[in-house]
Image (cartoon, rainbow, N blue to C red; front, side, top):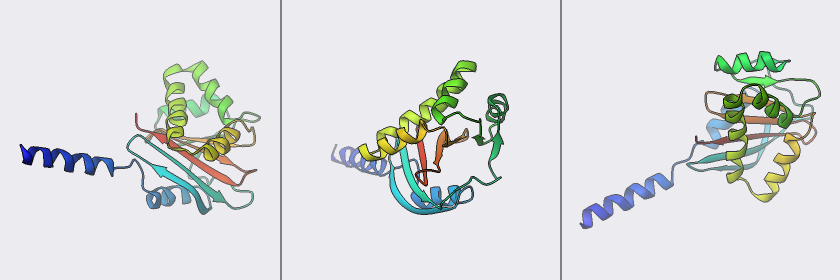
Length: 167
């Protein structure tokens, strides 16, 4: 009985140390897309990840991420499983997500879930930065279907915000 209890406690301890993402690996992935500065915030658990990285002035996402200038193009790219930068003129990341939900509810819910699930890993200050960024039409939205991650580039705040939930 003592062995079983010890095994269970060990397993729980190991599981509690698991995180969806590691900061170094995430920085390596995102650095291929955007010139990153220092990490402002990073928190990852078994259920969510939230990160905020400073960027250079006038940051831009490289051509390694496919650009969609229309919602239809972006949705086709998502269906193909490719990361998509939604460069829909005049639309905030929040508005793009709402438009995706209007056209394809399951796909839209996947994008929305990524953005909402990552909030659980944020402090109040990071939530404030995130909510401001997703409502800003000058911000860019990247969705990564492979991992279910949402990336928001807020050029005005010179910040890249990464959110992801498990499930």
